[in-house]
Image (tube, rainbow, N blue to C red; front, top):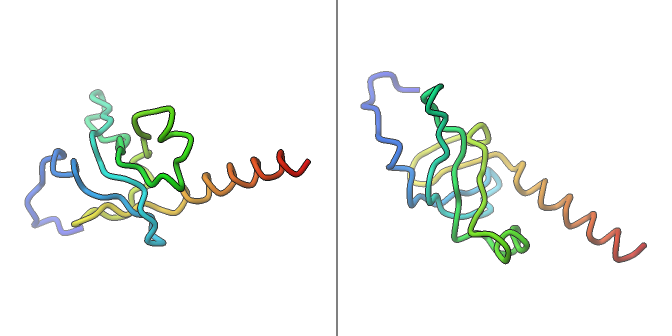
Length: 101
């Protein structure tokens, strides 16, 4: 990290697009989850979700919360590790197993 750079307000994250490190679009940051006691960001609340990955969540909820520990980089966009894709793939695999069983 560049220790000489000016700190930015956390609100600058709002509106940024979120992608996995594989380039898959997840959604857009709508809000932040904070731990006020620890004075840290604990999650990113996403909306405008990728409907292919978040089919159920898009239909039944307003968005999803991505744990901030998944964030790998913040710039013009936010990059998170591919765990979100893996979770959605495992859900799909479970659904397919139920259908074929």
